[in-house]
Length: 334
Image 1 (tube, rainbow, N blue to C red):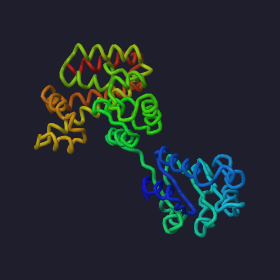
Image 2 (cartoon, one colour):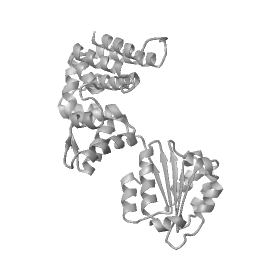
Image 3 (cartoon, rainbow, N blue to C red):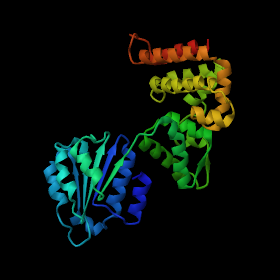
Image 4 (cartoon, rainbow, N blue to C red):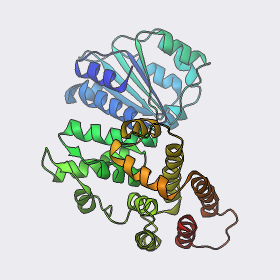
């Protein structure tokens, strides 16, 4: 089942005896778990019918015993096992999974990894219609802008493409972190606001002028003065502008430029679909491709790999990250 299907069923009070939630992205696992914990039982019912245990501190036999308890004066006994990936001998849960108690709702949080599909526990989970199995996958960086747009749209807001990219470049693909920052905006801005770079700078603290996105634009247009201003700012503010994610963003940017060179149909729509960007930004890649031919682009990608290793201490004994970045940008643009 998808995240949306599970939440829809829960909101309609359609409950299953077991929810096995696993995967690399904790955000969706936490969302489902929190909804169940907050909404299945009333506050009065929780006193006797809610058991929350943690993998590090629990024995799987104790979890089995809790799951086999009957509810007191309500319909369900709710058992939530958090950090299940830390529990020993989790395969023993297989015996309960085969025939779960209908009056128990067991929620298993198995974060940052997935069950081995060859194991008997996974096979039992997968066969049983009373068990909801959900794999929470990390979103790719390219999926984040759309996710931000969708999240804000559900809250009654819109956002311009430049601001979406600004947030995704700055915040990465940690959904919990992204949601935390987006909720700052929804608290202070009225509904139906179209969020722009000024809103982001004022409420989140991401500079609208000195960020990776503006650095990419400066490099793409060969604006040496602007690029130098930005990297000097980065060098002075290294906590907010770490060299490693900066290089990673530039690597993704030049990889897409290289893809652009080999796209036969250069129409805006086709380029956007082929290289995985918003149509709004196709013009930036078109400009960059004019200033960086395929040979030069390959050379830049090689430089980025080299300086990524240097930023991690390989063949670099003492160079400051800020100085490394300045050196890298100089080599890219000359």
